[in-house]
Image (cartoon, rainbow, N blue to C red; front, side, top):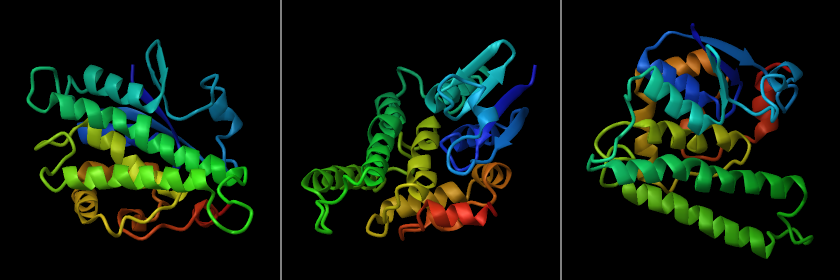
Length: 234
């Protein structure tokens, strides 16, 4: 049975497309365009939560990007890009793999939610106190990552791993929804340059999200979602 990857355009499911391209495995890519912002009805039929990604592999149907990445790397990649217990970089790998969704992406989604409900302002055109605290915490996350990347080429250490696949989405794709500037983080920018030089990454972008602006790999905050949405012609 061929592995099927259900990919929602401009979403965290780009992690799965990228992994498949890095592994060079056979898979079927089914892409769904947003309608206009959320997943279309046919995607929502795949999983009760209607969230991306979803993969199908024979009798297996799996959601959650982290679970999909681990499953594919282990089952189809024979453990490639997974760092196992006993390896000197295992603890770092484990930390950064889970940091992606538990810390970085949750902070971005919190920012998006606050803006959506008007909680980002104090009503006088200034950021609310709680938003300022969130910004400080987020800046600390980026500074910590930048410091880490000043000593190693990849987050786990010397080798590219699934931890990088998990984190890069938050540094690129998710900035469409919660724009932020990376200009002061030179090591993160150098890291993204290494990412963009990988054949697997370029192939994944071409197949999964060709409309996504390459400026996401630069430092300046990208245009917010409506501008990205307009490029899709809908």
